[in-house]
Length: 114
Image (cartoon, rainbow, N blue to C red; front, side, top):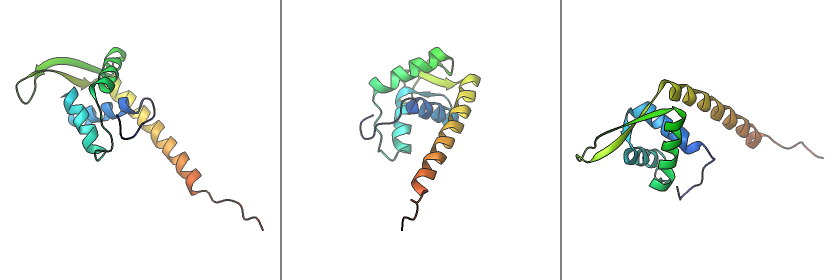
């Protein structure tokens, strides 16, 4: 990613959500979808994405298999597992809670000091 840095683990969450919504997808497709959803504010490169995919496979959150891409090239497709779906739900709740807490801080007004 280059345009905006994101909190550690955020890219993994974006990958899980992308696979949850779109189903099995190859790495290039995952990267392009994340860029598209971000309004091109995030740029995902192979050096950033593939270590995350490897870690998610090792954790059992996703599985991969070889297949043919849209242009008939050999590509590794990734799919969300049941464990990955549970992880996505838990992490989404944590992010929503964190965002709500931060929102309270931005909405808070200082005490009236007269």
